[in-house]
Image 1 (spheres, rainbow, N blue to C red):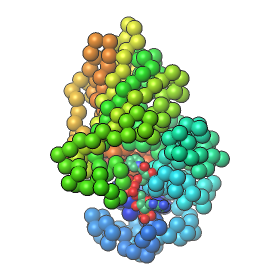
Image 2: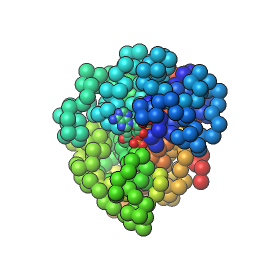
Image 3: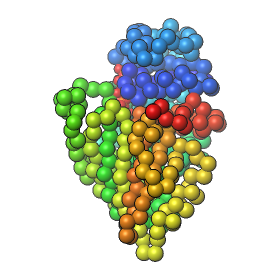
Image 4: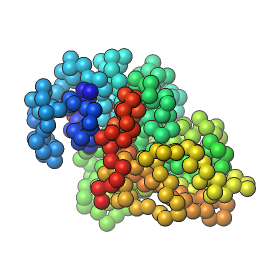
Length: 344
Ligand SMILES: NC(=O)c1ccc[n+]([C@@H]2O[C@H](COP(=O)([O-])OP(=O)(O)OC[C@H]3O[C@@H](n4cnc5c(N)ncnc54)[C@H](OP(=O)(O)O)[C@@H]3O)[C@@H](O)[C@H]2O)c1
């Protein structure tokens, strides 16, 4: 297979290049960069080491988008900022499978999208055909999708435990999500608040409630299963390079217990290696670092459920799930090129 990564110098693009390098079914990689076409890929990212034969025809250099279009990839990963992504990917739609890591196709309702992103979705004509890329939840639709809207990191971390609870009627509509993210979640950019001196030894609540765009994304997906679902979301920046934890607090419906939640999770994710309820022993984010797993634990406190969910924002929260979606779409083993074990 021939795979292109657009926005290859960014954090999720860099992780995609690493994952595709180790993928048994990908034999050609096109690394695409609008800022560095013609530069050597491992000059920008020496961590990649000597480039393999998979870069053969490109001479190990970043390509322009036009060059990538001419090379006719089987799959395009768009690791670009929201609102730019749908435009840059224009020449690929209808010609190849596009897996978009940005938010441009994640929210179907144009008004809700505009509330979150301040403008109409850039390609409303394609919204209907985009499949939301929560791999364990929309598996069958993803096997046939030509446009995949890869979810946000907070969103995956929250939705994998929450969706089965709403579908099986285990919990009341309102969920409070207090979440912690490593700084790479903001992308590779220079801004005062992301400096080491600002972030080290410090925790920052930012964009609480509807100010954070993932509120609308989480709520939109939950409302497909329970129209009355409501999300109170409190994201925090913590001094980690990468990694994420979401504490989900939700009330149980009368008569429901943790055992009902456990049954809902078991029914939703049988034999799925990357979505794991681990019991009452609460996992640390380091336990999934570098792996494509989302692990969660739960305890019952009176008539409430407290769930702690962890993932690596750059793997299951972004590039790993994107590769998982490619595997589903092309009929490959779901785990191909992905790690179930962490790199701790
Ligand atoms: N970081 C995470 O944990 C995470 C998790 C889930 C989803 N996401 C989403 O994944 C996407 C990429 O995130 P990231 O963290 O990799 O971002 P990033 O580190 O900022 O990289 C984005 C890359 O896109 C290219 N780019 C930037 N502005 C552009 C523009 N106006 N037009 C065309 N290309 C442009 C640049 O690459 P070139 O110069 O090489 O073209 C840049 O390096 C975003 O939509 C983000 O929300 C990120």
